Image 1 (cartoon, one colour):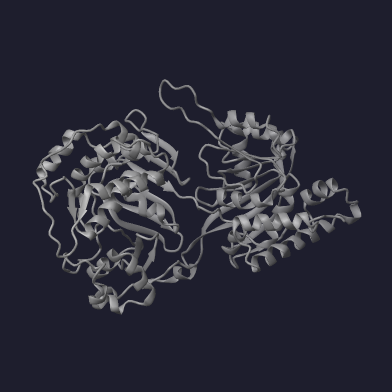
Image 2 (image 1 turned 30 degrees about the horizontal axis):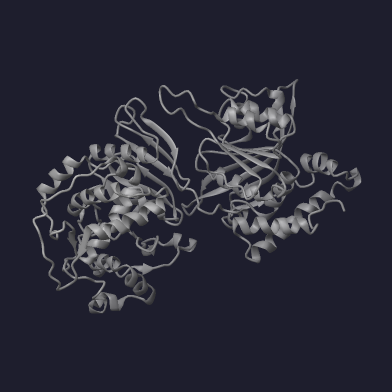
Length: 618
């Protein structure tokens, strides 16, 4: 991806500081450094550019920011935030209040943030071409490319220490080399060599007689970070992608990048696109980097980034009046567990225990709701309730689901690669193939079209299916299932046992939260009235923000299906409700004992089952 010339539009007038100071060797000389709390000093010692940023920040106006190693949910109530937290070893984020807007500022603090080192890039790129072209072995992974690039940078640059004098040359001598290997190595297309030479002739940079570019230590750190960020990683988006606190990243066209933050909700970044041609170039390069080229003829891309995040790109003004735009929906590196879902009050222990029993005994379910209501998160979380010995097949167009089971086949649909490419593999194709793989459970990322009929066919043959669906209520879900393009016969809908309705709701405090509004059992279809009967097992009470087990004592699935399957006589079927309460207490105790992580919880549930503590009717 080409090195971008974008600059941050700071929300304040920077304080004037001496650019010649190397803070890495002059920390104690800074009065501001001596005023910092202990944890902030530790950050500054490892990242002197953070102290540079603090020097340009008007601390007399805003005060010294609070430093947090991690963000807690109680920070949501902070009205005028002035907080800095680390994203990784080199990048920090400053959340700063905007008194004139509901969205506060999101300011990434990178090593290259305050230093305009773009003038050094063309001559460094030119020298790198020859070195990369001479490599015997091509690095294959992103991390290998990053390591090789950093090693090569030490060969094409010379660091001038404070007070040191290095012999310089005019820097006009250039060597010739190929570009093809560089394209493969960096997974990007460098500017043509002639253009590089032209750019070098416009801006003179100090070089040693052997052609190495002379940099100060601060400039070297900035160049090293900038080259890796733009050539290996995702360019200006890298700080956002590295921040685990971000859920969504949105660019609506020329203007700032907007983000949805897990703690501070809607924020606006100081990083912005100021020209439409710059934005067009960026999305083209981004699409090439993820190997989904975009053109005027095919202006829309839906793809997955290396970290699993979903990205949608729309290119040009023909279909987007405000110009090119993109949206990235990030995924958690470690999936949220059902304990995390409970901790966020999206559901409670009884609801989780009820789902545990239903899933364990092969009930099919849909998690349904509007966009960004947390459907995939919930579906992911409840996969820990699938019996550990089961074989799972997941089918998705964008890989998002993570299953803790070892016997897991992961299928991903393949889109059409071009006009002459007829090698597409649809979710419909994969679902048909899955039925031949003898799975115990089939998970479908989302039911949208013709794959729905195959999913219901699988349910009829005894294959439990779990999926997400776009519908805000059970009634709307049934309407969509029975209409184009899914067209499920009404008499087949009751093969679906459970519908979880989930939504993003706004609380009286103004905070938007995700809640499971209801868990419903589909009981049957009446051919005479053409109607469906369903029973709400659990419901959310918005006034108290609690959940009620409204269907206790009247569960068709627990009594007529699961209890019957277990051979419980009619006079003992009520014991199944005691099992729900028992499992709710098990989950609560596991939560209190600290087993909240996705994988840890699955292993503990496996141990509990192996010890025979989940046997029903014994």
